[in-house]
Image 1 (cartoon, helix red, strand yellow):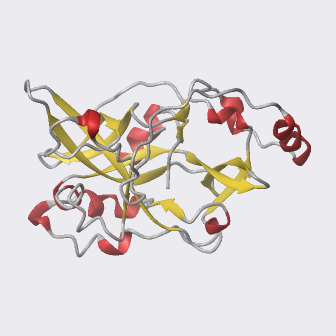
Image 2 (cartoon, helix red, strand yellow):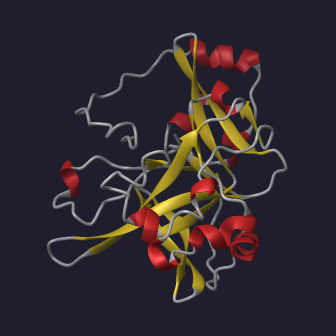
Amino acid sequence: MCGRFVITSAPAALRQLFGYVEQPNFPPRYNVAPTQPIPVVLVENGARHFRLMRWGLLPGWVKDPRGFTLLINARSETVLEKPAFKNAIRRRRGLIPADGYYEWKSEGGRKQPFFIHRADGEPLGFAAVFETWVGPNGEELDTVAIVTAAAGEDLAALHDRVPVTISPRDFERWLDHRGDEVDAILPLMTAPRIGEFAWHPVSTRVNRVANDDEQLLLPISAEEMEAEAMKPKKAVRKVAAVSSDDGQGSLF
């Protein structure tokens, strides 16, 4: 799954790559987390546009979002059938610009974070589905989830799920939702090719959403990992458990 990601490319470079008409200016983000507003590229009236949406999809039929599981990911294997996603995958597909993401691997009873990025250093586009939730008083909230797939042989060493990334040559095919047909986009919802991505361990500072600086991306040595593992854990206030909706979403 994908629960944190990074946007570090210059706004002008992302605009050129994704081809949206707006000219937004935004700072680099090194620890983007669920419930935060994130950039989404979509097609509207035949042109690509840049929109900010809340990361965590809310289907239109939800009455009270306080009692609904936060859906940050949508499984490619079931996205066509799940009530939360089956309409969005046909009519509301988007791309989320990014430069990489974090994943946590269980090692020796603890979770070690890794930064994962394209091996060539280029930006990437996460496959996404979105919905506009309308509240009881007419308020509107644009929400989005990242599509995931089973990990390939290499990335499976870190986690069994990976975000689906769309190649620039396939942007138009993914974003084209005319006719509600999905046959053309089904082959796109797969894991990256072996060797397409690289990764390295990073500091557990990334675990805290409040930490959002470029130091989070720096690789750490085995000695530094061991030193972090030896630090005493701070007490964490417990919160009520939330259902995981078949692994398609989780709360952070």
